[in-house]
Length: 286
Image 1 (cartoon, rainbow, N blue to C red):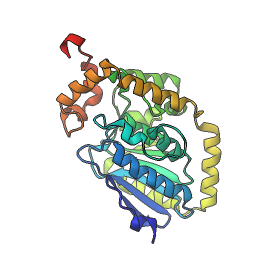
Image 2 (image 1 turned 90 degrees about the horizontal axis):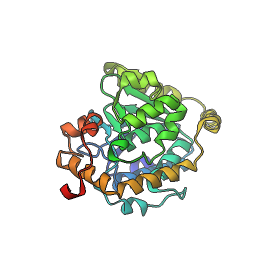
Image 3 (image 1 turned 135 degrees about the vertical axis):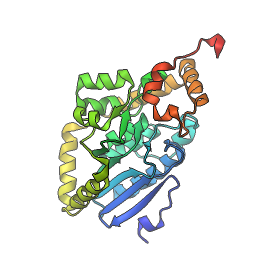
Image 4 (image 1 turned 120 degrees about the horizontal axis):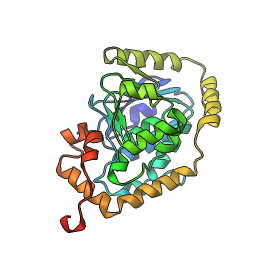
């Protein structure tokens, strides 16, 4: 039985548009956070794609027009995700991103809605990023949590947007709309939302008709010249989790959850701005 027919993920749907073109649609209400169950589903999908010799293109999108992937699930027990099997030997989220980048298929993020933190790291690990001009929002807000990004965002952004703009993105912790993300090179292109789906479908379908061997060769040669050295990824992941254990991180996290973090709320829709108004409380106030 074909994998797409038998596979039953819990937090996204897999649609076989054709034997050579698959669509993965994230659907983890209320805001598409990235938790252990979603990561388990992604790892199973990656294993299939690493061994599938028919699929040429995978498009990732979201069933929620406001949230592509909000960020990592900050309420989840990280030990659950770390217990999931992987092939790289890296921490669970880094394992997913490194494998995603190296897949022998073309991966396209169709970003409509918010992709912050680990959500931004996910789209950065895909080959191509198309954004809705009016509805896409990207950002790395970890600095506001008193942490560094743990999934390699600094390394991938440096290759895409350059040193100065990487500093701007990572140190500011603010949101970037589709227009500015395109100007910086954070995404390939920002398309007016009215024609967004048609454009992505047309491009993905076109690429899915080329000779698979050529697509794999092109990706291999580009990766050889542009991918960051992998030894930076474990160090960044370790730095994030070390920060997450500190009282400053926990104080900010608690305050944001009290105000609606991980719900379809003002705080989630405006997290880039709200991070600049939220600071660790003194120990006596915690």
